[in-house]
Length: 99
Image 1 (tube, rainbow, N blue to C red):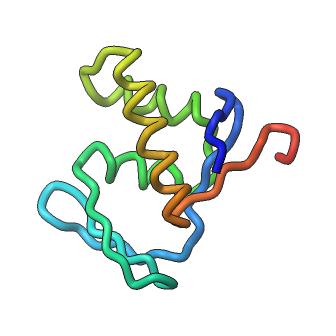
Image 2 (cartoon, helix red, strand yellow):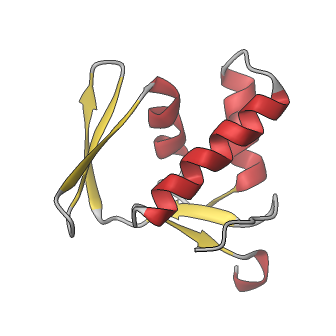
Image 3 (tube, rainbow, N blue to C red):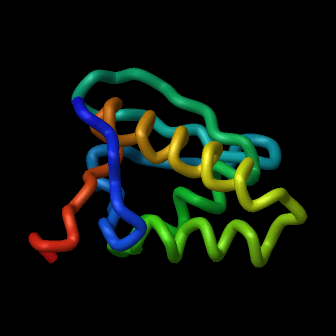
C-alpha cells in the first residue's frame, strides 16, 4: 500500500478489532486474522482518536496537545502508527476528496 496522506485525509478504525486495556496501553485483537497487537499509552490515545473519522492533522494536534513531544517526531511517530494500523486492516484512510 502506498502511504502518503495529506494533513486533511481522514483515518478511522475499521471496527474489525476488539480492544482491552493492557497495562498503560491497549491490546487489540484483529478479528479476521486473530492477530494480537499491543499499543503503548500514546498508541492507545491515538486509537481512541480514530474511533470516529479524524484528519491526520487533528490527530497530530491532539497528540501534541496532550504529550510533550517535538512536532517533527510527533509527525513521524503518528504517521508511522497510522500506516501500521492501516496496513494491518485495523484502520482505513480516506482521501479528502472522498470525504
